[in-house]
Image 1: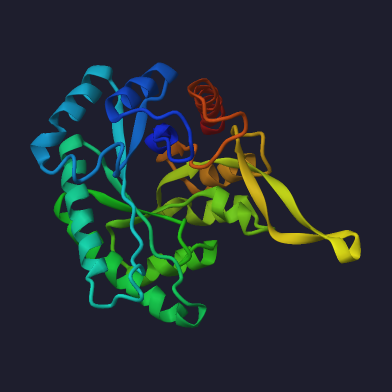
Image 2 (image 1 turned 90 degrees about the horizontal axis):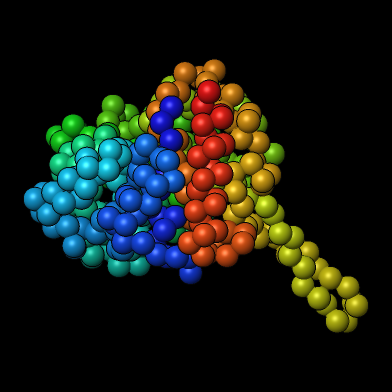
Length: 298
């Protein structure tokens, strides 16, 4: 397995310290990571700022000089978006976005372009949302094949987010160029789930997993007439360094190994994290993350 640092950790989206793309590559090397995943939007690799294959030449040259692999470009898709504006070709625009990313990935030597499925638009439209994502990702996978790049579907959005649903969704798409980027954090947040069995089941279909760890923060609202508190569900979560939260990552990696997974293992700080978003705190979490990943990958 190859440890990867995801650039979203230094994108500044939740008030964290922000680095531009080249400084992020330098940061990943300084922290000891052998590979990176790059967010395909600003402030990193946006298709607006990197509009042609030649435009990524400096990024590739820098990565080669630093001796770090660009493993994955992280696309941001939602194939159920635009539910109330059917005249706008949201799916077509996103597939065009993916086409551009696969060409950029090839130019950078990256093997994977990350994608999402879609958020539910209406609980009564479950099958419609599901089928829309299936059709879109089948076409996108065929386009990725033209560039010799694999699409990695991350179990992040609502459609196909459970372990069983994720496997079923991949079966429905049924394209060899769509592989799994199966993460433990989303599965663990669903509740009482066996991470060992989930990882072992998905391992043969995986090209990458992305790690984060969380603590739960119970929420209550004071009700003056009752002189009491009402529990609010679901609880909030807060990111903490790997191994300090409630995820059973030992079990997850045991399942990956028993299932034969040998791909990329990314660390991300993709939400507010305990201890602030200062550069020093982000660096500390990233170093701890690498140490944990190296231990789990042995």
